[in-house]
Length: 208
Image 1 (cartoon, rainbow, N blue to C red):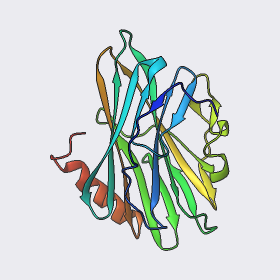
Image 2: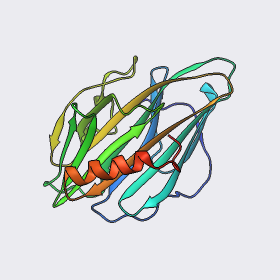
Image 3: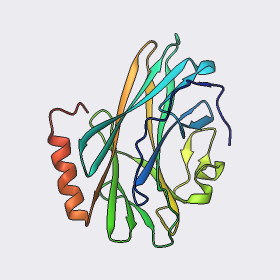
């Protein structure tokens, strides 16, 4: 894995303790042929790119986990980046099933009798680039078809221990900050999840 030159701020991990059947959310960033995952923190300073990435969780519903991802460009040049988001279960049960739905651009994780929907919003648009991976490949270069261009290797489904990953391409102007929202909704079936997502997106208190 190719890490960026950066410094992690000394902050405790703000993620709450989660049940074993809850999806773990891991934000990341790709820039100039390099990438990094924020596995144990919610803020990164990337000095060689003059970028700062901050992640904040918003508590809005017991079945919805929503994160706001802020990337600030402190340089004098525009930055072409990709916001990355990985989701996977903390346990490694063989009954897991992860797949992407290209028709409605959603990611679904199945475990036991629970279903999880993963999606994001950026400039009023959802995810367009996504993949699934066996969990043992999730934190390696095997997720990329081209690391230099930041293209994910497309794999529509995985059975067993697995992770979903999506990327959102954006350009950040000098001294500007871009915001992306990603969320996970849990329920018992797809219909319930879509209904909850529609209600979420209509909620005017959430700035998408």
